[in-house]
Length: 338
Image 1 (cartoon, one colour):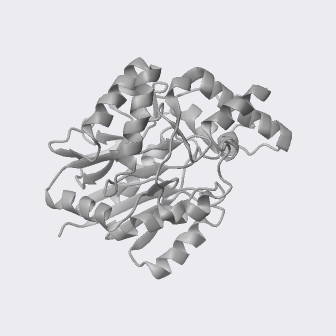
Image 2: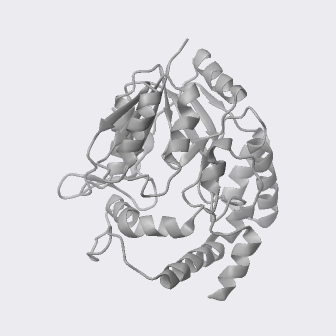
């Protein structure tokens, strides 16, 4: 039987409010080893990992310091984590994501490895402000399971890569998140010989059309197809939760991700407070949340939809009181306040 190594990179994910324990527990049944690379957490992240280690010996905690001065650090951490994997296959998941479980899902993933497929693509629904609100401007399809080839790594594809005076790579703005799967030798997107897609043809066709046209009617059909695919038991679906609480996401952005993205895209950072947590009032935070939602509705309103999905049971308790809005209608109504 082929073996699977799952790899995750973390940095203060407990303070960040991510469903990290749920993430780990969701991939235990498919993993022969779990590589958790910590970038220097100062919260309880490592304590949580070590607690889980005592119960699940397959978890390995490895420290690899996050260097805030390097633009593509997110991709570097993922590349390092992948290089630590010893399995025949690698399964990549982020600390704010949870795999929908069940024996049928686990068997489906294991069956892919026995077919000697290079890569498995799965659905990756991204919530925005609530458990019944989905956004389509984020990629809903993501490579998850890949053969553990030495020449497959993470980084900025060559066509989008630029170099700083110090010799560090950075990215043409918004072309990559620095974590694309690339060829270690050529730095170009990795070429797979064989692949499997655990997604319906109907959804794929509608997804491509929606990304191109962004029209309302296609969007309505798209969300129905997504709903059907995600609720089909046995499909491997990984749910993305960090945008479900917009206030928390903005807080993380204030002190960390804004700095990270600006560095990645080679933008000058003049504001000394960027990358640090800002002490603002609850009223100001609430206004920021509404402004963010309103901007999203204005800029890509045709790509935000109401939806009802069957979530992993693991996240049921975590989800309590996490949603910013009850529904899409609630979001629309509240953003009228500003």
